[in-house]
Length: 302
Image 1: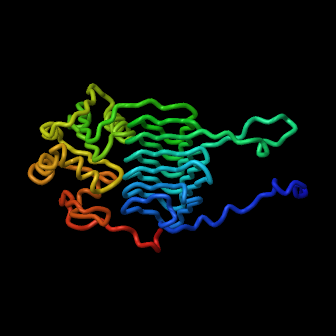
Image 2 (image 1 turned 45 degrees about the horizontal axis):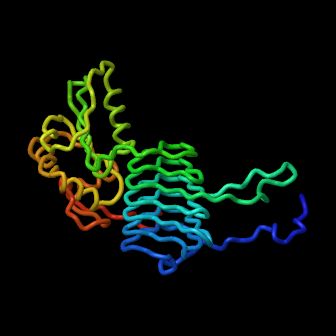
Image 3 (image 1 turned 120 degrees about the vertical axis):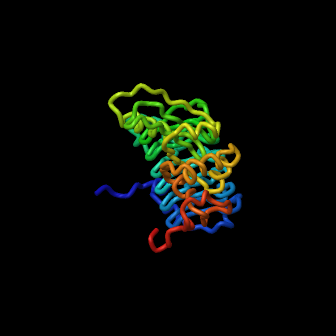
């Protein structure tokens, strides 16, 4: 085993426990949800917007300089690691999957005689614009900007800017492919399309060996009547999802599809929750197709 370095400045030291209280943050909006096991360092440099969700075991590693700014209705999955030495800005309604890493510093390449961990750090900010979606286990490297509504796939290592992509906030997707029984599927996202519509599109198409249809995204409630089955996926906040459905005038069309015409409907993630009457996570009335209330798991199960 090697001996300790002679220079005391090179010794490793504890960064602290990461335990925190909400009043230590630089700014914090109403209704934050920080699950059990979340660790926060330098909370005085971190700002959280309205109804930010941070999943279990995530680490928000602030720094003594620069800031971490997380906007309204951002959803951050479990076991993420954000290090804001160079500064992190996450705009509103961004979805970030579990195990995502965001890094804002890197060691300069030193001469061969110097160990890399002893070389100076270079800092560069990361900026994620509104409505973007970051897939599970992705890594965002220093200096990257993720454009508005952009999608980053699971496991990606992002070392350059991801451009702005088109953003549908209550998109409807209809499959006119030759699926079994010539049925037509509609998939409505409660908040944003992201990679979920792409996955659904592939799933519907792969259900038949003879694919002749084309997927079209649209917003008109009348188009729901053309579908034999509805898929209702979604991610994020209860109230935001219902607001998007209501603002697009889709609620009545969905009710007719499921309750009057008795056509099959599949809810996925938030979409499944919206089928109930109410939720602990919001104030709006759900679709009410299934009696009951969506409640949080007890802390003992977390």
